Length: 516
Image (cartoon, rainbow, N blue to C red; front, side, top):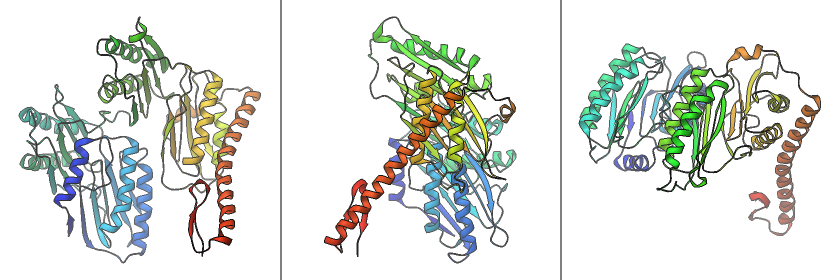
């Protein structure tokens, strides 16, 4: 058996977590490799590569997943579990695991890697549903300010995890001096989850209970606490995706904080009724705040309200006293600012994407056609099943915030499509989100499928042609820039080749060309 661990290794990891829990570290906490396996480049390792690609792709949509690849005797089983982190952080962690596992467990039959934000395991035998409580602990050096209360909190987490649909729970002391997290992998039974967490808690009490942060980790569960928050607080009701906060704060003497609380309460109360609401609170311009709340068009009222409540809690804690903030969840968006942004298109966004390519190239045209419907829908929301082959289907959802007019919604989607060409074209699944609109495309149904059966609204043909034309021009322009860069590189290469053979030089757009 091979287990790697070192003091310098732990020091680097601990330092990174002390200063920023939200940053995905590429350094594994620990690794374990067992069993003599197959030679490199064998079918077993080809199947491992396929398994890693599949699990990394699923991390964009799931915080836990199991998969099996291949046939006996080269069949391989694998799973990943992410903590209460964003989809981007989960997928980034799985990408690191994909790069690290082969060098660490070169020819071993089974391997595991633990990171600060995820756990990955593969094996040549079926371990699904088998509880393993053998583990290890790691911790900080400073003492918690209220260790007795923190210990009591950790005990209650076990019961909370057992009643949770995802067998995972988080908690925080009222004075926010300690935070706790206790998840099990979702392949084991609840009674095995209890047993694993109890044994992990015993290990935790021996190694870490009095420290300012610590975890006891096994391949089936872990328990952990810290003096700083290290989870999103989404409670898994709706997957937390991302947040952005301003760098400037409200004036200490202003009533902005009170107005912001009133704003959040109003948005959370009113928005679920129609899926959207925007409002302004404050008499004086210096303390006035503006906000909007948007829920995904297929989400029920209770799920909308729950998502917005989580979003409010996260914005309050992640953007304390900041003048502007926005948070994205799988099911909702919540945004506020000290200036009016209503009706203005915010085109800066971020993407979450699968790591492997889609073999069918029809999807871009089909997506452009579908987006024509969004601006003229009553809720500026649309979904569609795209048939890109006889047996190949894809699913797409798009939505705009309803403070925008039709033209601005159209403009937001067009700009997003232009950015998508650069980051996501050819992927089997992706999301692109801004504060004004978002688009998601995937190889499985991720929305309420019943709305696919609703009759399609009749659209104005002229508007449809116009949006389609604008999207095609935007996409063509983005592709044209890339093509132009390639042409310039080639021209410079030809010119340079005749005069400076045997050198390496950089052409336009950063192209590096080596001549013989």
